[in-house]
Image 1 (cartoon, rainbow, N blue to C red):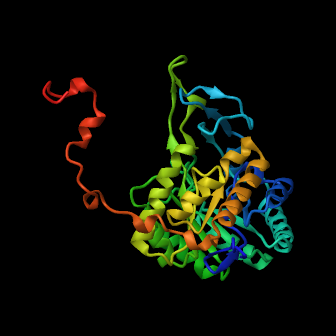
Image 2 (image 1 turned 135 degrees about the vertical axis):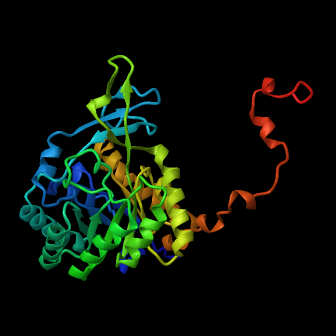
Amino acid sequence: MTIDLSVSVGGIRLKNPVIAGAAEHLIHAEGIRAALSTGVGAVVVKSNNEVEASKDQLERSEYTLLDEHWRQVPWNDAAPRSVTLACRSGMSPLPFDQWLEQAVRLDREAKKQDAYVIASLILGALEPAVAMARQIEQAGIRVMEFNVGVPYGSQTAKGNVATELSTEGIREQVSAIRSAVSIPVWVKTSGQSERVPALAGAAFESGADAVIMAGRLLGFLPDPETQKPLFGTSLGVGGFWHLPITCHWLAMTRKALGPDRPLIGINGAQTGSDVLRMMLAGASAVEIASSIMYAGFPALARAVEEVSGYFIDRGENAAAIIGRAADEHRTFMQMPRGDGNWRNYVPADALPASEG
């Protein structure tokens, strides 16, 4: 029996559901080629926009891994799966023309490997973003990402990047890009909201072909020894612990919008098993990003192999499992009663003597 690992995302076919998500290791051609060599379905290059200060922001970046006691641990592939990554980051340092030329050249290489290289545009100001989107299509890029969910919007200089939290803003921005280009547009939305499904719905209503959910969260970590903030400011945070949050938003968005709206999961995926969990929650494909920065490209290759092995072992096509767990989701009040069950989970001295 031949197993089909391919998935459909907004009108295009990916040879498998694993995507290398945009991050610093995908700035230069060498990193993008290394990601392609792992067998992923697509690579999203490190994002760009028109704002020079966003490139300066990259030169002010900092990164660390934190253990369960919030202590820093070495940045290498020996880091445990349980680490939290905390960082501040910025745009690709490449000038837009050079960035675009590189992306076009590598997308041609990717096509020969039945894969995609996707140009990621981050919103600075809308008019320049529209002009850049047109250039991206005219240059021959086959798919673009439009990121309006950067976590740092409130922490950087006004206009560098945007953390869009309103459905009205999403509609305006996505409609403008959709009117400018005919290629597939994947819109990346913020996770710093209780309205994630509504933001996704606004993106789809305005012409998005797929929605990537959801951008990282902001955190702030004081150090008891120095009594100062780690790295002096708020940081984007992520890690294995984010996977249930991402899966929740995938499932709730599928429930709100229906199964025909392609979703791409991001944040919390490090392994093939993580990819599968997000697919069961409703993701057509899943991006792995931050962990590859410290674990290296072999970790990405392992994720591809794990996903492939899962479907081969089960004799099941990849697309068949999308949303399977999400479609079994029930509300709290639909769950069976377990009278008094809560008593099994509190200290004995929290109960009356007759019950302890």
